[in-house]
Image: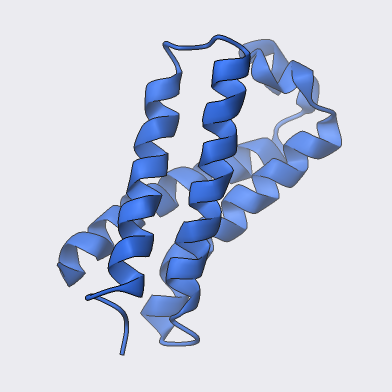
Length: 124
């Protein structure tokens, strides 16, 4: 179970980190032209979301890998699950049902990591 949780956390962390960096470094106008959801948010909000994704992704891996406050791994997973619940809510509000699957997958992954790291496969 421990190895599976590392794999799940690593895959989703990579997605969050990549998405966060893209939101942080891409000009808002260019990013909003490719995707429609950013048009509902200010440029500052999109950058803030990028920061959340970057820090959340790092929080899924670094505390456990470095054995520094490893309890932060399930805390980060719980926070990112809440973040993804917000993303799912936004997809429903915008009636973007075709795009919701990825958000639900990330939400499920974060629930699994939080459950596993708070439970039987918690770091010692």
